[in-house]
Length: 307
Image (tube, rainbow, N blue to C red; front, side):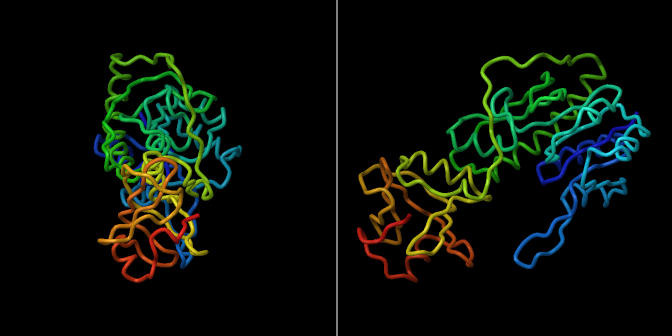
């Protein structure tokens, strides 16, 4: 029996690869349209499309999924399941009703916590110590469907949203395979979500702006959660600076003020404690160490302010 796979970014690739490795009959892959990326505005394919095309799987990239012709294509396939992993659009009920056995979603959190588009980023920002992957049967709500299987991982102190996403993406492929096998054998049954829920809204570029009145602990988590996009950013003398890697220190300082530059250390005051910036990226330049950044500038302790 065939499957249809909906997915777009790198996070979805291990799940598609796991299905391929299991020799599942993937009749169709649906992904977002190609987009212009980078300074050169190069037309780029979604990572899921690249994998599907390399394996000879048919790909559709509809600009609109609320379309009768698109519904007809899905209905003609009559899939056993539709698998959805970070597709990027809410599926209409006509799509959800297409497969004979339902739509399965692979979500990057331990539901019902962190429903929504950015669960990995918000888990880091909020200081969670664990995260994981949940497979669920999709319904018309946003990540509210019955749970099939969950698998947990620890969030390490050095994790940012890029590294945690890579871990959860790989885990997602494994959990998806176990879920399909468990449903087919009858070992896994959907169960309603229980416990307190939370929401992880999509991030916008402006969400990366640093509020130096926050504590150093909060700022360090914010930096980790915002990397690689939209990145935690601030301004120094009108120049935009992205903070890539930082950690909190004990001590007192004025929020946003440059407190230390000696020994190649870049320390900025916070609402509580101090933030040691280890890596940063000035506008139009590559990521560099704090020592390299300081070596090219004449900055005075206690006189410069990051805003």
